[in-house]
Length: 601
Image (cartoon, rainbow, N blue to C red; front, side):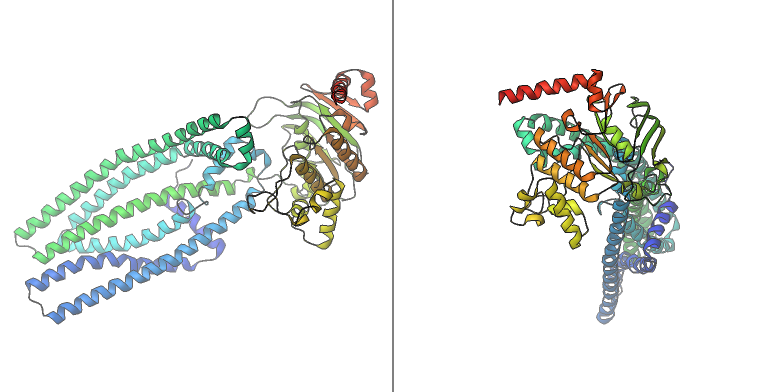
């Protein structure tokens, strides 16, 4: 990764300020630097004037007037500095929230291939740390930049004061600070070097923390006695994360000795020169107090400057990782130029010599696979586990991309479609569907709140057999689901959730209907009823059904049977039964199972 420079940090900040048009932040930084920078400088003069007043027998009025002027100036400067900091902090929060919203919007557009890629998850975890809070990353980087300007004003003024006595002390303080800063830079580089290890360990720890604390896992944890195993894994992952943090802390401790040694050297030499000059009669006692307090204050400001600068660079590195993710166009969905499709047209889908394997794996799921689904055709995809049935659905839906070969929809490569247009063609119920923490009706119709949409949503819910259940609830279709957001939320059974997901697909009314084993939580009769209802509702649409129960797909125009070596048979149920091959054997096996089940009943 290219070394991040101060100018790169400033460029990223300017980019954000430009996008929000908050240019006045620069002016506020300048005003804040002036008033914040003089506060510590005014403090060093109090002791000098007190000593002068005692030794020179100042009149009481003169002394009181001077104290009032210094105190009032300090208070006014501090109050202005404090108020500006508070105002700017609110603006920094606003800038971070703006980036967070932009990030959420773009994350929804990340190519689905990346979502299932663990290496990408490590990268995105690191990047999102920059905008998830005010502890590190984007927001504190703005505060760091503001404070650096404040420290610069103080440093310039302290340097001028010490130069009146001996400019060598001023340069000694600067040199000591530079060496300390170099040590801190080594620490920052080490932290940056370990950030992927930290993100990887943090992501694992977060997962087990979620599993151990989320009530959604509570039943399985108790029934299958998984507590000990989960806690053991959690402790191990936490230990891994702690070890990374410990390595960083040890490196900080080692380099901290350099800073301590330079501070002792700087103070020792400075105090020696000041005391020697006083003993030689070159400076007065009040000047001794001035220069001693100036050295202390100058040293404090310089080290605060270096600490803040290192934080600024570290936060800048984190923010730069975020910007790289946001700017990396290869991460986002590949989108073409075809923006219109006929909503009434049932498309043809064709695989042409498609090869596919999942990212970061060597196993080919599909090898030179060619297959065509005709417009309006109902086709069932069946076969053994691991044969690639669900993979075909992901490829058809454009969630994954063929490694080699082409997938065509209406003779157009799917990459040529604009992605939102392409997604609009599919009403799909996946194996790993989910319901959301909103109302039952919103789970089906989304954000459309029109009366027509609500009525259609209720019709779709009725079609999947949930009407009676939902209308028995106190809030009926406005009942919130899950208890994550609303404590009065209802948690449906697995079968009911599947029916709700199917109702969602019905409501969308896409050109292609795909059911990827969505009825696994239903009994055989309920599944047959759902499939038959779908068959009646989709009518002339192109439909793809995946099911592990072969009896549910008998009504399809064609059945494609897969094993681990790919497509083995394709034809009607009657044709495949006559072939007496893989499909026939699987159907007979399942038939015996259901016959035994019926006999036991």
